[in-house]
Image (cartoon, rainbow, N blue to C red; front, top):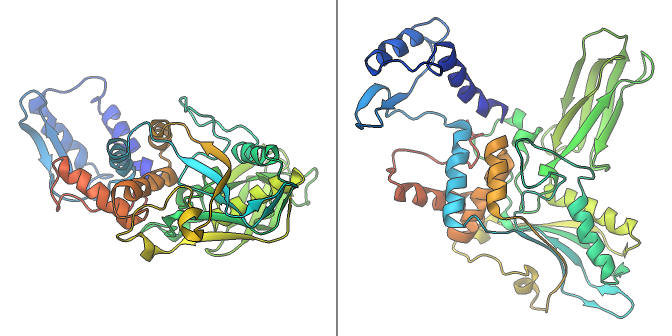
Length: 405
């Protein structure tokens, strides 16, 4: 996301600095002015693709490599979300349910597993919705999960004689896009893709100085959890010293190493660290919320992921998701219904939210393509773009967000 904005911002600043934005040049002078800019030392080694057309006549005013392919970066989100609005519809709503195929007896005992089923809702979080000009988050980030937990309590459930299953099999278990850089994957930009996503699939790590120099910094996580082991090696230094903090988590690891220094007078810092397995994490958080409400589990927490092969030439899984798998009557114990899709499109494009764009791509694959996978979404997006007038050689789809290199 940081990278994706860079080129667009650069071009806007470039145009403003040359007076294009405040005082548009005459059309006949445009080519000379562009060429003068591109000959400057800072720009001469870059690769440029420019295509300027007169909107009144349709004639070309200036072109430089107009048929070359370039990295589109976050402009890809405009294509993905346009396809989602056209193919799925702006009023589409996501349904997240708590289900069981077991019986619920008169004493409030669930005789079987309890399953939290994700179907791609990007906004199970503390984000304020509808989106208004900037991203706002209100604690607790668990508020939607807490609403689901409260519904379980209202059903009179007291004990689950089975596991808590976190089911994200509505989409394929393809966590990352092709060409994503490995150093993006620990941050929010490269958060893994899952049909059961919570808090944008990150934890917020807050780092503050201790009370005196020489002590370890104070490190806390939000929402509170023990999902990652935090190896805190950050020391508090004297006031006025420059802050130097490093954070690293290896792919596949549940250990986050923090090192460096933070001065006494520092206001503190926050970083969003990507979750390794979103369904697993969501299951842990949700079970802790149920247990805090007095509900007991006899089993363990486990995640249920979809196999990639099942998404080819298969219809979307039924709702409730357990019906086909068990053949037993399914009880929906609790449900959260999202705001219309158009509200998330605002979030996706205004904040350049990579995860949300990837979820939108898999949504169109699930509903209009060959399944909730990258391949299904890419196929649906390709057909949409071809129908819009592009040709097969005009573009390549490698992800839904533009993070791919």
